[in-house]
Amino acid sequence: LWVVSAPAEVELLSGAVTPGPLVIADGHHRYETALEFARQDDRPGTRSIMCFCVDADSEELVVLPYNRAVRGDAVEVGNTLVERFGGTEVPDPVAAAQQLPTGGTHPFVAVLPDRSLRAEIDDVRVVAQTGPRHEAWLALDVVALHEGVLPELFPAGIEDVRFSKEPDEIVRLVRDEGFTAGFLLRAMDAAQVVDVASSGERMPQKASYFWPKAITGLVFRPFDD
Image 1 (spheres, rainbow, N blue to C red):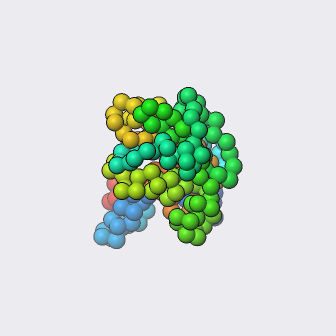
Image 2: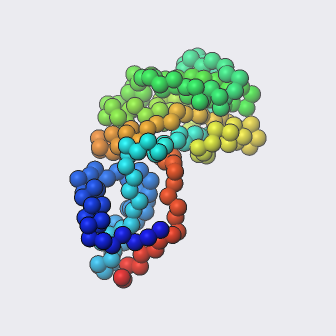
Image 3: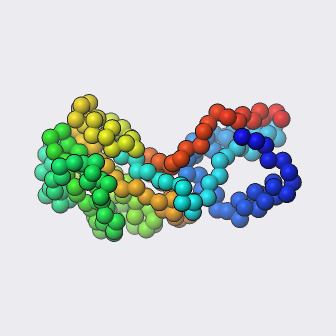
């Protein structure tokens, strides 16, 4: 870890990020807090914020899916998945999630206490629930799940939801911790996040898990420097 202070290097880095766009992929809460702090404190140091910039086109950048385990009052979840979303049983939910195909529909794997199902929903049904929205946002599997699938499975609403990038953890929550159902999703690529942000939409809650993560706690910048 070192400070870059040579004018030529600073100019090079500044020139790389100045054209933009800069997309906040992780840390929007910190950014919003920094904006509010700058409004309340007029010291020069509060007018900027540290950030970790990554090239969205980097092959080393991976966007893992944020899977969900939900708890709620639901009746016949398995039958509903079969009848309304074409659910078919799979012996190994984790393996099935790793083999979900690409394409225009939104496939997912549902983990239930006694069975696992591969199911899907198409864009037409998602739009019927959300109304017309930007196609980049509608293309997200997590949007399809929360807007098109969960309302039909849990019409009274969800009591609790747990997120994890680890499919095995979702299976454990359902099979050992009493969660009603788990949902394993496909990974997305960084370009989808950029497209959604560029459209003016916001990514849904816990939609993406960027990897590798930057190590935190190495640098602190006092506002009065």
